[in-house]
Length: 215
Image (cartoon, rainbow, N blue to C red; front, side, top):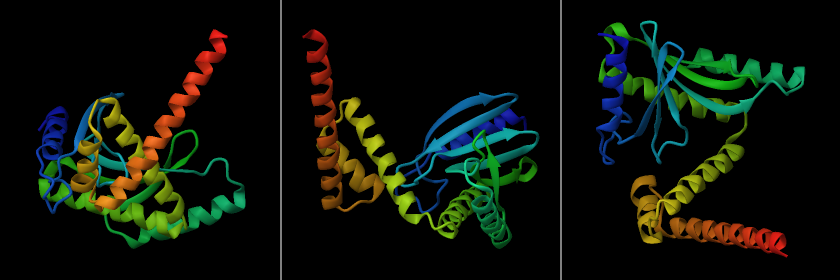
């Protein structure tokens, strides 16, 4: 099968899902496709999954990866070596999964590589599972669980703000948080209240800037 056909097949696996699915690949992911050099790059997101997942197709392989946003380039040598040692231990503990560095800031990247020769939907689902379990293992081993929770909450707020901009009602967004994300109703209400305050503060700030320029 041609690599572009593989990219279409993988996109189809990710898009044709149901929220009730017990498999990761069976969830209804929001998917877009980009071209990176001579490779197809698929970006998949779902509100129950805390990271955007990137799927690269090319050279006879499909690579699934997550940028964990942990920059190592600016760290001092001692701290960097300590982190590298922990990452190497994680690499030896999990099947399929590996950790690499990428980008100018040498961010920690979680990865799983798959051979396209015999790739099946089941194998792709196993790879997604290994990728997320491995990512959580990295975060836990580096002692970054608290920072991760804050980052996850910021990403969730961003998703809510985007839905507000699209004109969805607060009730629709609350249902999204409860039914899609899996929050309790009171948790969803608290987040919407907090985001509502953020929006109000931004609007006040914008009005103050406008009045300043007018005066």
